Amino acid sequence: EQRRRQDEEERRRQDEERRRLEEEVEQQLRQVQEAQMLRAAAEQAERLREEEEQREKQRLAWERAKAAEAEAKRLAEEERQRAAAIAAAAAAVAVEQQAVVQSATAAAAVAPAGADPAGV
Image 1 (cartoon, helix red, strand yellow):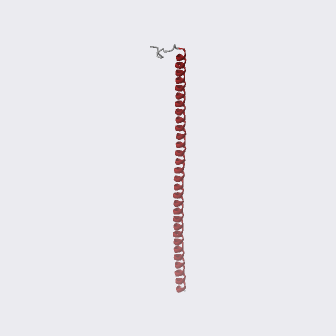
Image 2 (cartoon, one colour):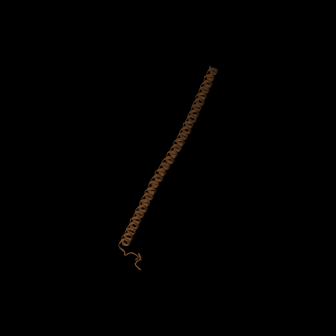
Image 3 (tube, one colour):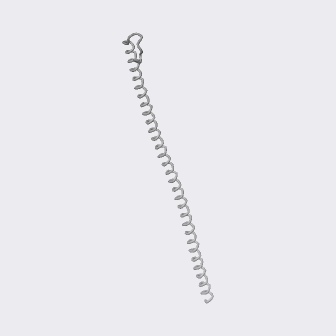
């Protein structure tokens, strides 16, 4: 009877030890799984951060391109206005020269023959 009780006690102790070890293994497994999930989440966060950085770089490049386009349009408009002003000035000079030529031609037509056109 004592031997049987000792055997039962030994079996119970072994069962408890086995359960304790199983629980310990399960706890370690949960910790490993949690660490894997945390690592996967960290990797995903890093990928998302890199994607966001890339989007920000693209946005900045787009803004720079739009600014460059606006500057090119502004410079083209300035150049167009400058060319128009030069053309207007050239036309005014041409009109003035034409008026001088017409005035000289008219003066020569009414001047007596042999007179100095300069009026001397």
